Length: 460
Image (tube, rainbow, N blue to C red; front, side):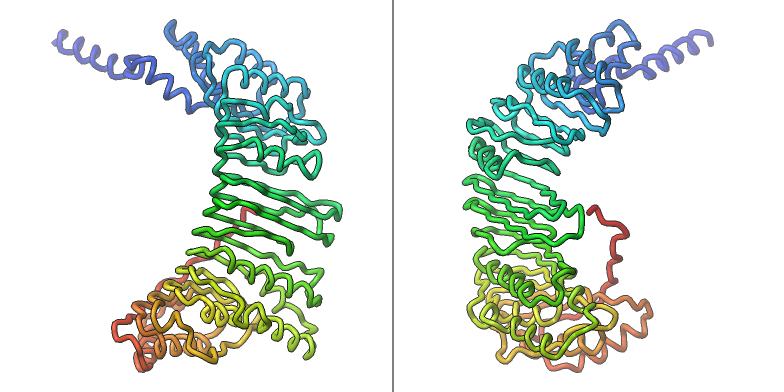
């Protein structure tokens, strides 16, 4: 009996400390996912663990820790190469310490740097932009990026510059010119105190580009974005975009345009927005996600609509930008959040469109009416297979649109209608009415799906 109990206790003891039985290489891999402060605390476990943390190739600190601890941890580390240097937090610190952290990382062949520390007005060390081993660089609120004419980041593939400032207008271009392998670029540009904002992005290697404009105050300003990126495959632009852009062919584009409230009754502003949409035809994108919700809602909220303003606005929408000069010859999939007038124009100018997802923008009962195109769009005759209607202002308009699609779309396979009414009998009544519509495609099926709930919060 005693022998059995002893054996049982021995097994339990072994099972309770399985982790110590692992090889150092596996333990170091596990520790590499933990903050450095946590790794250091394991040194009290046993003699074997005392200096094990010093061989972890990552340095990860939240700046709630004392800066002296960060420096001591770096000095005690015994690795020749650092995989990741990550320091985040908002605490005030001495700038020479930040310089020291960067220098230590570079001398140890750091591959990934992620810094999120607020230090307005101070320059980021120039040596950072001549790091030969850096693959991934992310800087958030880190101060001023200096102009480095001889920037050299030969291995850098991912660059994220969030809410940083630049020494002058040429800083970013000098930096990009020193990144011959750059594949992904993310920029968050800050505009404050009424200053105009200009951004010129030029790189022959960038494949994915994300640009976000953030506005500290509500003062109007001019924003210009110029892109020269012949290898671009994905583009996302958020917030306000000016009227100077040079765009190249890509596979997928995601664009959100913001309504400038200070220019609601300024006809030049709608013209600039439509001119930008016109230029989207130069992208030759296969997939386009275009969100005009803020822009269209702003127009719907205008209470002092004058007849001349409405007429002028309609003339702009039907202008040369949508009267045959605009074309999306390669567009296969469109996700459009806008007023119905934009839907009509896109159908008429995307001859190869196969999948359409549409969500109508309206405001307190105000919306544009659905007007059938003068001529049946070519995409309905030979390409359009799937239509998803996420939202329309009223049921009558939705019926008119669905009736038009069924009557003319010859290869249509499926129409999905997001409907918020949960009553089964209501769905059956709608289905019965739709089933009486004339159909060009006998294979087309109609489906009602639950409307997705809008997100409660926005990261922006």
